[in-house]
Every structure is written in C-alpha cells, then in structure tokens.
Image (cartoon, rainbow, N blue to C red; front, side, top):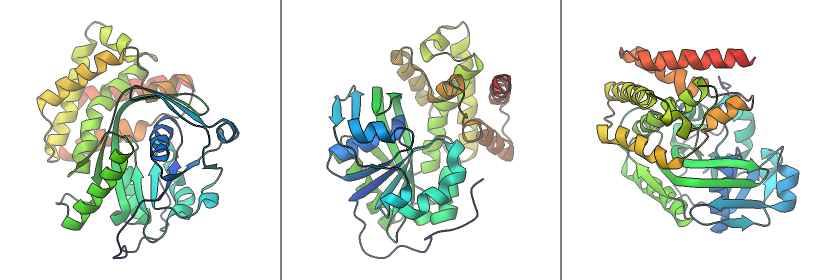
Length: 330
C-alpha cells in the first residue's frame, strides 16, 4: 500500500495547461521508448535513472523500432527526482510492485499545474495516485505494445505501440467539457511525437480491455514455467484455455458496466500470433527473479469479481498456479 500522505492535491488553477517538461519515472522498456519519442519530438524530457545512469548519460539511447529506428546521442537523465524538480507531466512506467514509493519519488516533480500519466499494468494505480496528488491531475494509459529492454539504453520495439489514454474520474461519470479538451490536448501531444495514441471516455473499461490480454498471456507464460507466446499458443488445448480466461475477464467487466465485444477477444488472439516468440514482461520478471505484478494484474481483478458475484474459476486456478511458481522460486 502507498503512504497516506498527500502532496499538492488542491484543485488546479484556471490557466491553461501546457506540456513543455516531462519526467519519466521508471525508465525501463516502456518508459524509455515513449520518453525517447517525446524527446525526439523536441520536448524537454528528463529520465529518472539509477542502475543505467552511467551508461545512458555517456552513450545515450538506441531505439530499434518497427516504426523506425532512432538514437538519442545525448539523454537528459538524473539519479533522483529532486534533481529533476517540478515538471508539467510525470509519466510513470515502473512496475506496480514499486508503488509504495509513489509519494517519495513523485512529490518533488509535482507543482500546481502538473499532471500525472501512469502507464502501469492492472488495476489500482490511478486510484492510489489520486489519493496522494488529487484525482484532477491523474490520467491512465494502457499500452498495447511489444517492447523489451535489451540492455542499458537499448530498447527493442517489435510490434504495435498504441496507448489508450483516459482521465481518472474516481467514479463512473461522463467527462466534463473541460476534461475532454484537456484529454484531447494530451493525446495530441503524444501523437505529435509519433506515438500511436487515442483518448477513451472510460479509463476503467480500457483497463479491463488490457486485462483481456494481460491476465491470460502474462499469467500462462509464468504458470507454464517461463515460455513465450508462440510456444504457449502451440500447446494442445492452450488457445481454448486462453479464451476461457478472456471470457471471465469479459464477464467481470460487463458486471461493472463495461461491455467488451466478443470480436475484441478474438482480435487479441489474432494480434498475438504475429508476435512470434514474444516474451511477456511478467514472464521476464519471473525468469529473472524479480518481483511480479501479481496484485494488480491477477489478485485485484479476482477481488473485484468476488465483489460483484461473478465466478472466475479459470482466473483463480491461474492465480494459484502463478503463486505456486513464485513460491518454488523462493
């Protein structure tokens, strides 16, 4: 759980919001890729780096991308958020296992007009950020992208790249006109940096749509011992199991008021086939001995299913298998 402290959570000022300076918190594969595109587009982007700081500050970043390779010979990076100072937009791309650090790391970046965009997996992050910094400044982005960090400052982007961005509303309601204008502005800024981006009216629905892929593919890649998506789909009966898990995600979302079409489930299978031997991020964390985002991707969706009384035996079985794999690793 994050701290119950609060920082700069008062209502926004009336002056227009402009994005000139951006901080990337969590400069792994996702943060580095999208941050590099924003820097390439001319924004002042500062990357918060620790283990990769020396290499990146000396050698820059290299992005290998299906959308076009590029390099940043010089990268503006710092070791602490206090060195960065207040920015217009904070992009959070670290794993949700680090969310207990939100207050200490993000607070120095937040001023009276700062907005926060979390690109994290699963459920709960936007709510935690809103409790700390005010719901009015929080956005969520769902990344549909195949991307891996090959080494310090080296990012491989092999497929897709879409971000669906929504305003955190705290409760299901319609966007106000001012909120819609601001969301459109954020989407335009990302799009101008050659980032495939679209705004969504319901962030929560978009989160459940992302879970349609994340829950089965990240989870089964772990439960089967650390395998890629090509190997997974080639296993007898596995595609049928993936579909059963997806159907449960769809049913929970529907009970919460978020309709997800059957065709979307089919599309998530079909877009995975050309990914070839893609290694999902949670599987990489598992095989490399790092913390896995079990709470946000699997436990929280199961908890919400129980709240609305929707049975999810397939997801519960998968969660048990993941927990067993992680316990064997200890």
